[in-house]
Structures are given as C-alpha cells and as structure tokens.
Length: 320
Image (cartoon, rainbow, N blue to C red; front, side, top):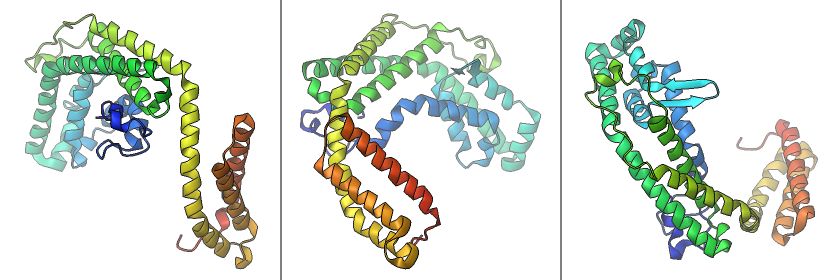
C-alpha cells in the first residue's frame, strides 16, 4: 500500500505523505519512518540483548523476541557484527536468566517462551529467504515503474517525493539483507541454534535479481537527484499554504494565552513579541516569496521565534 496507493492516477495530485489518499493510504508518519525501519529492527534486537528480562517482564516480550528473530540473523554496525540468533540462544541457556524467567512466569512459562524462540528460528530458516526473494521482486518492479513514470513526467517528483524515498529505503534494506544472508557466510549455521531447528538455509536461486534491484535503485536515485529542485519547490509551495492556514487559525488562541500570561496581562513582554513574530511569519507565508532572500528571511523569522520561546519559559500559560 505504501508504494502502490500514491501512484494511482486519481491520487497523484496530492502530496504523498501529507494527506490521506483515496481514503486508505496512511498519513505522513509511515513515509518518514520507513527509511529508518531497518534500524528500528536493529534497536529491537539490541534491547533484548541488553535487557533480556524484557522477554518475561513485558506482557508481549515473547512476541517481540519472535518478531526480532524473524527479521534477520545478523546485523552490523561500525566495528560490530551482531549475530542475534546465536546470542539469544546463549541467553536462553544462561542460569541467571532461566532463574529470573522461572521466578516471573514459573517453569511452564519458561518452557513456552523457549519453545516460541526455537519455533521462530525454524520459521526463519524455512521462510525468510523466500519471503525476501518475493519482496525484492516486488520492490524491483515498483522501482522500475516509478523511474519510468517520473522520467516521463518529472513534475510528479513534487507530490511523489516521499514515494521515491520510501522506495529507495526498501531497496536499500533488501540489498543489505541479501548481502548479509547470502554473501556473508554465517559461522553459526552448524551451531545448535540452527541444527536444532531441523531446517537448512537455502541457496539463492535467483542470482540476477539483487544486482538488477541495485541497478534500478541507483537509476532512480540519480533521476531524483537531478530533479530535486522540483520536489523542493513543490514542498515549499504546499507547506507555505498549509502553515499559513494553521498559523491563522492558531493566532487568536496564542495571542490570548500569551497575552494573559505575560507581564501585566496586556500582551506585552515576551508574549507580545512571540505573537508579533507568529503574525509576521503567517503574513509572509501567505504572501509568499521567491529566491534565496525569501528563504533566508523565513529561516531568520523562525530562529527569532525559537529564541523568544526559549526566553518565555517563565511565562505561565493558562491551562498549562
């Protein structure tokens, strides 16, 4: 849905990521979060390794662990290779962890948690390679389609910029997953964490797919870079109207609250300066402007507003 809905003909006039498209596409949050999705999975793994007691203390700890196990068998950072399955196997055989889990959930609860962990490993070995192969095929098709559409109609880079970043993020993550699971060897495949699952890791049966995805992603990235100004101008125009309307609606409330909470209750002091700056930003946004000078002026106005807001921390606004 994230990649498909915004490209429907009746939806392309809307800025993907800022609004609901045809009543079912999500709002802006998923588009902004998608490029960080793989890192969220990594931090979930880190959380269970650093604080394994989450598995038995959190009501959905076992479910979270299984989700983390289903994402990848390894991740990497600067100077670090994290073999998550192997490390969690050690956790489940640590005496202190076993005792803490048993104290919290009794022996039956520990056995059920350990069984769920082993099942998640077996499911990963059996299904993950095929699932990611299908995902790479889907992302490849979407990347090629998006590139073709935007090459023919570069003006669509404005409303579809978030679609481009989402597509490239998925392509990046799928390429990294393929490298980590089919190019980098797993030194733990003969360990009990995997041999006990009864499953073997399949070889990649479509060696041409990943390079094709990489080439398609690079082509889309290069096309996006060459038309970045289109997206920037579109976003500026869209946000100009949106911010102007929102500020216009909020100004009376802000003026009343800040005026009542400032020195003397007459709208002077920090409160009065904040309202004045808000009014100026709203007017400038409504009138619009072109060129570097207008952009620099807007940045300065926002910087002044932020400074006044910091200074106004001592103001007590009615209702908190």
